[in-house]
Amino acid sequence: MNRRQYLARTGAASLSTGLFASVAGCLGGLPGSSDNSDVTVSDRTGQRALDRAAGSLNTAAQSLTDLQDLENPEAVDFDPTEPRAHIETARGHLETAAAELGDDRAADVATLRSYADVLEGLVAVTVTVTDDALADDIDAVNAALAGSGDLEAANEIVDARYEKIGGARDRHAEATATIAAIDGDRLDELAGIDLADLEDGAATLGEVVTALETLAGSYDATLDADDGYGALERGQSHVDSGEYEAAQGEFETAAATFATALDRLESGRTDAPDGLDDYFETAICQNRHLTDAATSFADGAAAAADGDPTARTHQSTGEAELEAVQNCSD
Image (cartoon, rainbow, N blue to C red; front, top):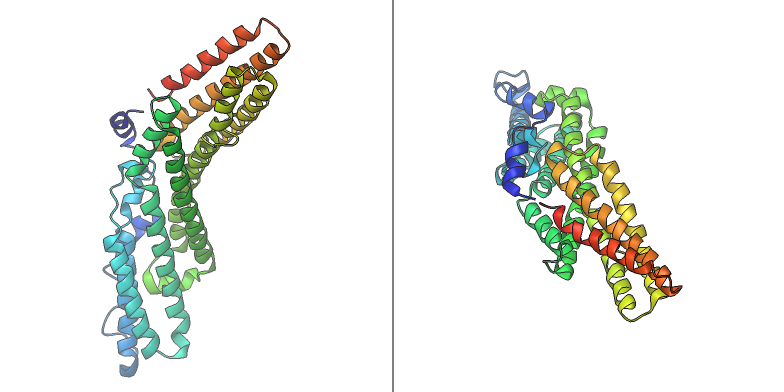
C-alpha cells in the first residue's frame, strides 16, 4: 500500500468525540474553583487542591482532542508527554486534597482519582493505536507475503505488534470498567464532565483497538509457522519430494487457516474506522488468494497421489493464485 495515498485519501475523515469537545469549554470555570467558596478556612487548602486536580485532569483530556481524527489513526500526531504530566500533577493535588479534607469528601477524591485512571488508560491506548511504526510493520508483512521479504522476520514483527495491541485492549477494558463505576453526577459537579461524553470517547478509541486487533490477529494466523504459511511451504516441500498425501494434509491445514483469517477480516472490516480500510482490503485480498492457492495445491496433491493428470492443472492454478498475492498491496 502506498502510505502517501492512504494518508491523503483518509486525512479528512474524522469522528466527533463529545468528551474532548466538552472539556475545552469547562477549563475556565470549574465548579468550586473560586477562592470565594463557602468552604471553611481549614478546608480551603484541600478544596483548592481538589479544584486544581480537576483542572489538571481536564487539561490532560484536552490534549487528547486529536482523537477527533481517529477515523485515520496514522494521521494523528500524538505526544503523550503533556497529558501524562498533567495527570501526574493532578494525582499530587489529590494526595493533598485527601490529606486536608474530611472523610465526607473522600468520595470526591475517589471520583477524580478514577477520572485520572481513565485518562491515563486512554492515553496509553492512544499511544499504541497511533504508532507511526504500524505502516512500516504492515509493509514488511506485505513484502514477505509477496515473496520479496523475510517471512520469519515478518512473523516476529506481527507477534510483537499483536502483543502490544492485546495490551491496549486490556488497558481499554480497564478504562471502560472504571468509567462504568464512576458517579456521573459527582464527576459533573467536580469537573464539569458529562459521563456520557467520557463513555463516547472511550468507545471511539475501542473501535480502533478492535480493528487493529483483528488485523494483527489475522496476520498472526496467516504467517503462523505451524498452521499458516508454514504449512503451505511444507506442503510444497512434500510435493517436491513426491510425498503427495503428506502435501495434501499440509495444504488443507493452510487453506483452513487462511479461510478463517479471511472470515475474521471480512467481519471486522464492517465496523473498522475508514482510515484502516486499505489495510483490511489488502489483507482480505491476500488471504482470499492464499486460500484459493492452498485449496488448488491440495487438489493437485490429491490428484497426483492418484496418478490423475489433472494434478498439473491444479498446480498451475495454485501458482497463479499465489502470484496474485503480490498484487494485493499495490
